[in-house]
Every structure is written in C-alpha cells, then in structure tokens.
Image (cartoon, rainbow, N blue to C red; front, side, top):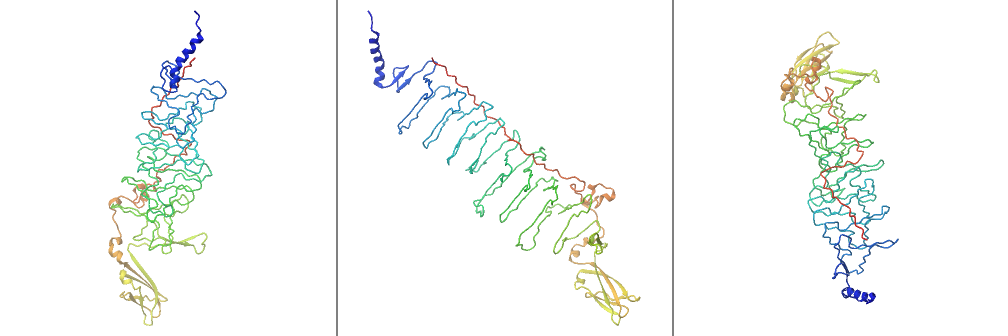
Length: 552
C-alpha cells in the first residue's frame, strides 16, 4: 500500500515541536531545553557555528534591550581546561581590533576577576618587528588611564623586558604629570634593583634648548613660608663597596658631568639654621682629603663670600681648625703655590686692620721682608727690606734728643715700657761733637737721663727683653734652642738642603711636596641608551592558539 509521506511528516513534526512549543524553548541534542535555545554538544566538534559570507552583517548579535536587566549579555561558565574565550583574527590585512568594547555608562570598560594562581591579563606580541604597543590606552578624562589596586605580597605591576626598546614608555604631551606616585604609608616610593646587571638606576634625558630639572624634592607645606615638614633628605645615597670601577675608586655617592656654561652643582639653604653642606669622613685610617677640587681653567678653585649686612661681633668667612685630642703636630691651614716660572704666593691677605694676623707665634724658614714698589722705578722694580733676626726676644726703642746747657736731657719712654720690658741695654751716639755721651741715670719710671756735651744732639737706642703677659705665661717661647721631640725627631724643616727625601720634612704633605695628587673622580660617560635592569623573571605564560575544527 502506498503511504503518503507528506501526511505522515506533518504529524511527526508536530509531535517533535510540541514540547518546545509548549515550553517555548528549543533544544539541540536534548529533549528538555532549559533556555530559549539549548545546545548539548557531546561530540568532538563545535557546539554553535555562525558563518557570515556577506559583505556586511554581524556573525552574532546579542541585544538585551531592557535597561533594568542586570545580568550579563554573554556569560561563559567554563569548566574545561581550555581558554574561556578565544578570538583568532584570520584576516592578516585587517587593521581592526580583535575586541572592541564601547562603554556609554559610568562603569568600567573591562573588569577581570581572578581568584586563583595565574596572570590576570597576558598580552603576547610575538612578532619581533612589531613596533606597535602591546597595550595602548587613550584617556582624555580627569580620571586614571590605568589603575592597579594591589594588596598582596607580589608586584602590583610588573614588566619583564628583554628587548632593546623601553620596558615602559610614557609619552607625556600635556601639562599634567607623566607619573604620579602616591605613598600612603611610611615606606619606599620607588626602587631600582640593578644588583644583577649594574647599569644606571635612573636616567633623565633633556633635549637641547629646554629648561628642566632632573629631580625636585619638596618637603614643606608652603614653598615661601614653610611651617611644617619632617626630617628628610632630597638625596640620600649609600655606597659600600671595595671594588674600583668607572673611574671612581670604590664607587661614589654623586658623580656628574656639566658641559654647558651653567653650574655643575647648586645648593641653596633658606632656613634660619643648618649647614649649607656637610661632608663627613668617618674612617679613622683614611688619609685622603675630605674635600678635593680640581680647576683646569683660569678661575679660583674655591671662593667663599659672606654677604651679611647685619654681622654682630667678629665673623670668620673661612674657619679651619683641628679639634681632635691627638698630641702630634697639626696644621689648621696649608697653602702652596710654586709655578714653574714666576712667583708663587702661598697665602695672600688683605685687610683693613691687618692683611695677616697671627694670634700666637709666627715663624718662617726663609727671610721676612717688607716689599714696596721701588720709588725710583715703581713700574719695573720692587724694593725689599729685610727683618733683622736675633737670638733673643727683644723690643727696640730709639730717638734723638738735645742736651741742655748743663749737658743733660731726660729721655721719655712709652708709658708702658716698664710693664713689658726688663734688662734694658743702651746705645748712644753723639751728633755734631766728638765727645761721647753717656747714661747718667738708668731707666726708672719709664725714663732715663743722658749726659754729654752741652747743647748737642744725641741719638739713642734702647733694647730690652720682652716681658709682657704672653712671655710670662709662655717662657719656653723665648728659648734659643728647641729640641725636636716626638714625631718631629729626625725630621727637617728643609730636608732637601741636607740631602734628605721630601717625606723627611717636618711638615711633609704627600699631596703637595712629592707631586702626587689625590685620585681624580672621573664622572661616568654620558648614557646613550636606556639601561634595563634584570632580575629573576616570572615563568613565562605559554599559550597555544586553538585551531577550531571546521564542521561540515
């Protein structure tokens, strides 16, 4: 019997669609669909596939239109070991983005919640010639272009960089800050760990013609009139190494090179107290100078000025002193100038009262001179007068006096003579007569009497041992011969005159007398590229692109 298949197909189709029609759900691969479209895929192929071969149209459009709907537009609970969502952009000529999110609301554009071990977001740009960014954020609003909230023990943000480019490049075109780092606890704001590779911790490059500051540190609540501000250092460096390198012996805290016409360093202190600069050397066996400066130009090595207009009492512009407790000889200030040709002056002083004043003894191994422009040829010659040396500490007084008709005269000495002199001696010379004068009465009450030919002149000179309070309290200062004891023994004031080496000098200075100068701290050469620190990297995340099978 011939069966009408069309008549049988209609009831069969109605039977199949009856449950779905009643529940208004459609199931593929199962009889009881739980949603409008429920696909149960157990085979090794794609569950749902949408082929769009036209020149326009979306492969899949999901449009929840109810504004009160707080559920997700797409929800993928992935229980497998594969990737939650995988997008392969197979058109190599396409310049479109793999994923684009347009957010018209006030929520976030993208949110990633990761509750297990693993990378929150991984971007792998594997083409080594790709010059574009792994991630680009264009942000024009007042908020943050990128915000990382991190409360764990790891890194809030980490970049492992092994290429030749920059690990992080911030192209700041606006007037805001390129990087703003807020530290809300008493901790370190920024750490550069270059212990595994050396290099440069921080490098700032400013193109020519731009006014810029490499580093600014502010620790006040008000720039012009600060009222608060904790103890802080604009720069605090610690170097502890025994290895020489880079032209600097065992490293250094600060090194720099200035090629322009500006100053290599400027320190300005506006406080009511505190030092402008303090440098301490704490090594007890360190024989290097505390401060060393070299000037290869025409200017002074050091210039010190005090410009205060309200000085009370005596002010010292430069103060050098030894304040230790050692009993050996020490020099508060040493100056040396010995050019190959011409004159060298070790110390030059100019003052309204004294050019040079010694508050104590003054000594010299050479001659002591009085020098003026030669009165007969002041433009081409100098006139030198020399001090007369003596084996005694003496004061000298002189004058000319006229004798009266009785052949006598009283010589008045300064009123302080008896207070500072003892053991006087006399020298008298007659003027205009061969008759020699003589001392009629010796000094008493700051005067003495001279006798000789009446109505003649007498030139007189008195020498006396100096006996002021200084000599009375320091009688050893008047000794003619002094023993060399302690570290002076075996040393010479002028060792070269006795065929001795320079280091046999009593005041030998290795930085001056033997031509040796302290090591020059050569600044590092200019950095020509970015220095990238290396440390123990995280294990790279290996991704395998998913090749989806084609379902016929």
